[in-house]
Image 1 (tube, rainbow, N blue to C red):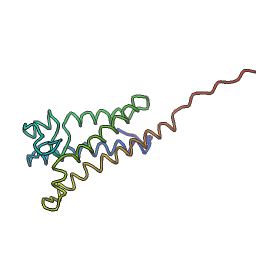
Image 2: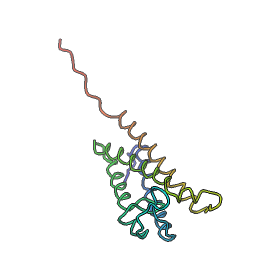
Image 3: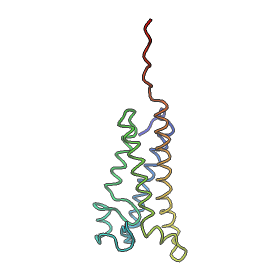
Image 4: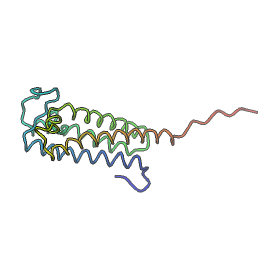
Amino acid sequence: MTDSGTPSTLRRLTTSSVVYIVLSFVAAAIAISRNIAAQPLGEGSGTGRPVLQEFLIGNGTGMSPGLYWLALQAALTFLAQRRDRWGIVGVVGLGLVVLLAGIFATTEPTFRRVLSPGTFDPILAVVELAMVIVPLLTVIFAVLELLRRRRVAPQPAAPQASP
């Protein structure tokens, strides 16, 4: 996906996005196996559909975004590799998608439940924290990549004065 001529900011952005997508599949597998349904607005706010169905065609699980969200992220990651305006759209879109994913992760009751002392589960805690930290890093890398692209963008030539 990236070659040796790829700027480090873009390489880091791409890597963190791919890590998040892989991590999301791991979190989804855990949530499906433990029947942790999405409840985006708090306890009892889910749809009531099976967790696997929610991951495949719905809002996701209690630990990961849905498959369509991850597909959108993968498309934006691919688009961000371009060197034209579509690449900028990919970087901005990727930054927004992962920012929202990280925010939504913290609204799930599962997030608070696995981090509270009474119901602490080390494996779930590591996965849940990673589902917030990796998007934060991805947003930082997206901002750095936008700043880099702005610095290296060709500036329009100033009009020459005629003699």
